[in-house]
Length: 437
Image (cartoon, rainbow, N blue to C red; front, side):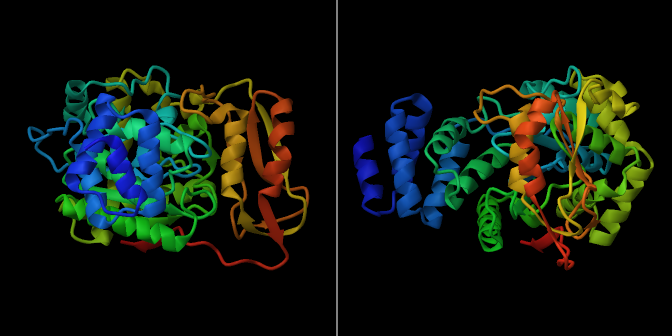
């Protein structure tokens, strides 16, 4: 069937057959569909909708457009965690070594930051020399030695997704649940996993901000995982404020290392809490522990003993990075950055934080990218000194901008100050984990 006929069928609100969807994905991969034809069909899908069978079909076609990894020669359960993206969302760097220290093999395929959200690969590349571009053979070798590997998506893994996502981003068709599900699950199913834990964000810093929509996404992700034989669980977690203390690549790695070293301050504790919760679910799904209490006890043990930190140190060395950062995390912090406080405009309680505005501010000073091919300044960022529910006095520090010049702060300072809503009455404290699906 010609592209025009498939486009017209969906334009008219009809369901596409599995074969028609397969023909579409083949056309995306081999170039027989032009970009304008791809975007026309994606827009028709966005407006007219996809039913669950179509959702499974597009996921399957995207999955089978590339290589499915085979880790059968690694004698350990295979599991991964995926987040839908947020501000200060750095848990992967803690979860992978924690899970590996408990006997799980973790082939973590991650992405780069785009827009107001950060990316795991950008964070890792703030470690001197760290290489995220490993072949499958080398990824497997790293996993056999330290239990986990952290890499970017290769051309062999769900290749249709890269083209589709770029076109969806350019045509305002990203926030559509069936296409989000197909994008995420085609990549995760390609990892050859036994279990998957999903961190579905909700709130002002999430791509999907309403809880009901986030819950729907979590349900569809889990049902898709089940349909393909992958044990999948989702936690719906709060993104109404940045996670933990720091936003910005090197700063976030610094926070993770402080946590792994047992040196976290109180503002870093939400990062630790969420990391433990997600990893505990991985342990249960993999059959390593039966209850959350037992899983958390095991995780606290490998964290306290330093075994998780040792795994991360080993991984950094295996992936060509400088392992000394594990012993001196402060070496990650650039010495000549300006540190400029953002001051409270009133006295009261922090009742709301516009997390999207915080993420955009870090992006605007160079810490993120607007377009996929933009460069990133790994050093710059923001430290969150106050969280929702905290008391604050007028003139007190809400946060600190780490930047190259005062001119950068002049561009984002007012936006950051306005991101905090301060009220006379104390607001309800947000719950970090809102639901489990």
